Amino acid sequence: MVAGDAGRRPGQRTDRGAGPRQTWASLPWLVRSAVVWSACLVVIAAGFYLLAQITMLVTPLAIAVAATLFLAALLDPVQLALRRLRLPAALAALLTVLLLLGVLGGVGVLVWNMTASQFSELGEELGQGLERTRDFITSSLPVTDDQLDGLLNQLSQAVSQQEVDPVSSARTVTEAFGSALLALVLLFFLLKDGRGMWHWVLRRMTGPNRGVAAEAGRVGWRTLGSYSRGTMLIAGIDAVGIGLALVLLGVPLALPLALITFIGGFVPIIGATVAGAVAVLVALAANGPTTALLTLAAVIAVQQIEGNLLEPLVMKRQVRLHPVVILLAVTAGALIAGIAGAFVAVPIAAVTWRVIDSVQRQREAAATSSPPSAPPSPAEPEAEPEPGPEPGPAPKPA
Image (cartoon, rainbow, N blue to C red):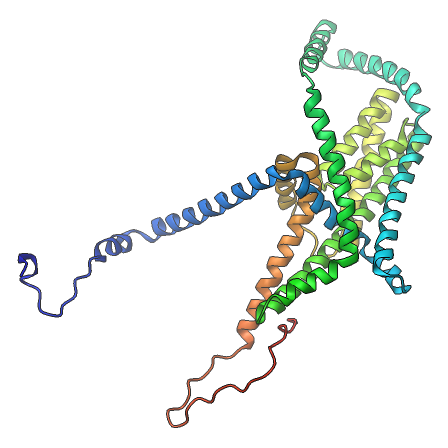
């Protein structure tokens, strides 16, 4: 017998793990909570970092897939309308893609034809506007001509020192063209066979998971469609309002500036701010500070009407996100994938939030609706379940 076991009764078990458990239990609850939450945050941060690294490796593919989903949700009503006319699925999808290309090409040709003649005039107006801006700065601010010239020279030298790598530029253009072509091909197949693909995925699931996944997919797709159509409508209203104000104020290149406003509307908060700043700068350089201030007032008025009146009416409540979430999503998307990432970050965040909320609601409804099963009586043995069909999807919660 070992000397350490002399005082132990036969059959008595030694708890070798009592030391660490007692040490953990003796810690204050605040320290234990901090340790647990810190470990969870480290795991979540590592997962996000790994996902970001993978996304950066396949950035063109990720951008193409995100753009495809966005365009498919936007054009899905058009494709369904063509299917109601008894057109085949392939023909309806092809006509929808051709309609998209026709609209984009028509807008591009219209903008070019209406603004190509203004570029030569804009050069002279910008020169005169810059001279007026220079006089305004030196007369109203404590800045001399020599200081302003030195600042401009430093800025021009910093810009000229930035070397342009032709190989990197060619690679970027090739990746952009390839992503656009891939997005168009994926868009055709998603419009043609998207519902069949989703049903194939659902058939691979069993039990209550099928119902949860089906409802989450419906909610996510509905959210993406509402977001895409609502964002396009709001961006169009902003572009029309600001473009009309620029025309009335006599600002040159009003149509391209309205187009920039429309594109910037797809990046909430940041896109509208940048587009408005570009319009104010063009007005300042071309027509002077008075027109620039009037342009700034028009931009602020249109954005306030859009944010406080139109967005609550057009956007559904379940699509809207808090401004803090929007800023974080846009910043993260821009850091990961540049301008394209900023475009797709907000719809991805909206869809992810709605899917998580839908899954949580269904699980809570299932937990409250299913009573706990009573144990079988000792006198009556538990009956074996009768064979029957496989249970279908879970009912949609109210």
